[in-house]
Image (cartoon, rainbow, N blue to C red):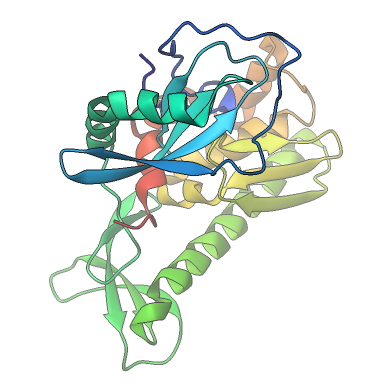
Length: 277
């Protein structure tokens, strides 16, 4: 039985937990590798009066049907052998409807960007407050009770987009500032800094000096964001995870171990913000 994908920050990757699939069907190497033209991209599984969408994917090296829950996106994915059939896939998924329901129920509940929802900003909980009557976009303030609030102006249908855009801008600004500061310390050059909604890793560094980060780091405490920036900048000198690399990280970010522990414990939770209920 596969386990749902877990997300940790070791080596900067948010590695899915390993799992062993159900079934024992063995297929030859020369089998068809891609989805057939008439094959749907997803199927539905009904369990306990609830309907679950299961995405289908074929994999060249798959020897059996396997189910996996992707924690970051809450997607249920069924991997099929090259010559597996849609009928077998449906039977396999339906047979394990209880497993799907149980694993999804264990995941942290989605927290959409909507009025009244609590969202962390730099590790500090903020309540989203819709200020429809005001002009502007998004800003922070304290309410009468001293609670941190994230205010958003305009019509209700724009709340999700405006909050998302605000968080991405804040993430880009802070990650670029931190990265360039660390680069100056090491005497290296950064080509550019970008932020994306990455679910497989928190950050990356290319051989051309381009750094990329998950915008969700703006939700974490500042020392976590700084660690990720230091980690990727250190790769501009050492494109590996050798002892010399970790010495550079220690030089740039002395409390990096504390940040790694935080990501191990809380990293997966960051992916639930902005998701629909």
